[in-house]
Image (cartoon, rainbow, N blue to C red):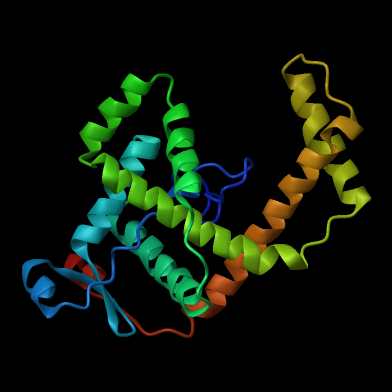
Length: 225
């Protein structure tokens, strides 16, 4: 997947781009008038995902990664987003603050070598600053929801941290010809990385089970056959 796995866009340092999995809140359109001017890509329960939403997500992927997935893959992401968004709404999970969104926008811009390169890529993608901000706000909202749901059950023991240090940190430092940090200096960072991995695994399993319980009609796939 461009930018990493579907949960890798979590706000933490260790997961970078999942900026793609949770990138839009605007794909559900109850208005019948909207259906008349845009093709329906899928029906999810009583909601719809439009082809324009699929392509909008593709433009956001172009901004973040310089490439996008195929339309069927993008549709998969939007269906998954629907599942998480539905759960977050049901639990009345709080929206991110303006300060959190500002930090997210700043982090995206800093991921480019220069601000000018970001602006050029954004213009090429066809996204406005407001649209980018909206997608980042959604990303933060949904990834924070998953974090709050699964983090409390995660436990990382000392042996797991040591194993990660020996099998990942030390070999990487050696390959780069660098002096590795000490285990103690690395402990907090490694612990958070392992927590993130566990959250991703739990969320992936939960999402798989949730998908099996919802009704999805994929019209985009039918049109391509």
